[in-house]
Each structure stands twice: as structure tokens, then as C-alpha cells.
Image (cartoon, rainbow, N blue to C red; front, side):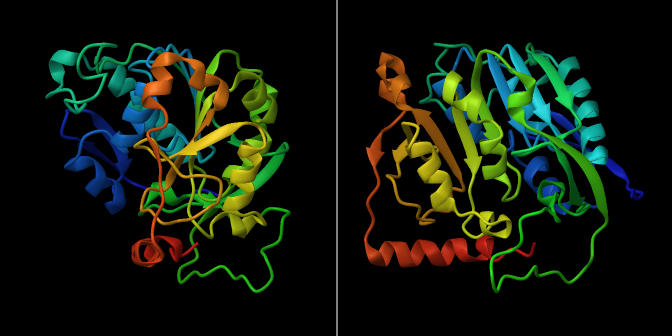
Length: 319
């Protein structure tokens, strides 16, 4: 099934141009008056792997992160199963490749970062190779159904899979959005080499993607960035703690984007949704030892209650 939509060109504060759905108020707000999307996460990955060879972007969406990865990584592979969103990503990649540093307003890196001070260079030009794939990724090949959200392309997500919802759970929806059947493969089936970074943002379907990438993750030990929102994995029969346990059993440590070690127990005490999984062997590197893990986060029950209240609107987002 397909539907008609209108495109709109917007420009962010550093001069990067993107095509988006005209109806997408979320991206209009996030792009028009801001620098790179999720720049704290981009900065974190660039500081951890400044000479990245291969980056895999699962949930490429309209290509915003994919483009920025290619300003410092040699090869970037972007996966986006939604046809309309995939097509916009291709157009955005073409736009970005045509832009040179002289066209940009200014570098967006903060003064205190290793990137900004010239240690690794801070070019905004897209110099890496970008390969794109109009497929979803999961723990097994097949098909799944994607819900299309024109007003927020970042929330296109899987609807029907073989795993039932947990007992008592129901999908909350006031408007029935369009759906499309898309093909799904496993990341391991691609046999990518020299993988230094994997970013996965699949609206709750992150764990099946991880399980389908087990060989890549275990043998190549990339830094893995996951979006994790309490309650989302449960739609597919999993939990955030299961994801933690999977990585911990394979000798990864877990941090936030600022380097805070979050320990071994899942707790959505922070508005930061991303978790960074770093294999312990990487911490033998003197540079990574310095920047990868800064401190262990401990909080009081009162702090946890306050932060939980801040996160609750995200947790209860209609699916």
C-alpha cells in the first residue's frame, strides 16, 4: 500500500539541507532551528571512534545521521525499509555530498571536544562512501508490516510480527495510519567487515536487530548505540533488561552519551534514550580508556521518582 505525500526542503543552523514530509512538524522543529540531529550522540561516536572504518545505521530514516557519519567514517551502510522515507534519504545524501565546508555556517562541535580542537579534524564535508539498503533488519529473514506516520517520520514502526503482545497489553491508536509490507533480513547475512559502529533506532524492535547481528557484534566488537525507551521492547515480547543482559554476558559495558556508566540494571531514570555498549577489550586502548567511561551513576529514590515523571510522557507515547 502506498499513499500520496508532499516534500518540503528545510535547512538547519549549520546550513545542511534536508527533504522531509511537509506534514512532519516534528522534524521541522528539530531541523529548522538546530544543528545536526541528535548531535550529542554523533559527538559521542566520533570521539569514541574518530577513525571509524565502517558504520552501520539501522533505521536510517531520511538520512540525517547517515550523512554525518560519512563526514568522518570511511564506509557507511544505511538501512531504511519504508520506501518513501528511503527515497528522501537518497535525495538528502545527494544534497549533502554537494555541500562543501565553505557553504556551511560553522562547525557544531563544542569547544571542549577532541574533535573540535583539531586532534582528529572537524570537516563537515561528506567524504565517506554511503551505501543504502531498502530493507528492514531483524533476527530472521521474512516480512513485516510498517505503519507510516507522515507527521513524524521518525516514528514509522513495525506493526504485525509473529511475537504476540504481552498479556494485558493493547496497542493504543486513535487514527489508523497507512501500512506497507517490507522485506526484512539479518545484519549478519551481509558479512560486513571492519565494523566499528552500529546505531540501531527501530522504535522498540532493537533487540531482534541485535540478535540478527550477533556474529558481527561478537566477532568485530563494534560500539553499539541503541535507542531504548521503557515499554517499547515489550510490544515485541522483550524487555530493556533483556537487552542489557545480552550485552553484559558478552563483556560489554553500558554508558550514556556523556560517558556515564549506568551499571547492570535497567532504569529509565534519564531523559537520554540512547545507550552505548562498549566492549571491555576496547578499554585497553589508552585513548578510549580516557573518554569511554567517566563515572558510575548512582541516584537516590527521590531523584529516580522525579526523573521517572519526566520520562513518563515518552514511555506512554501512542504506538
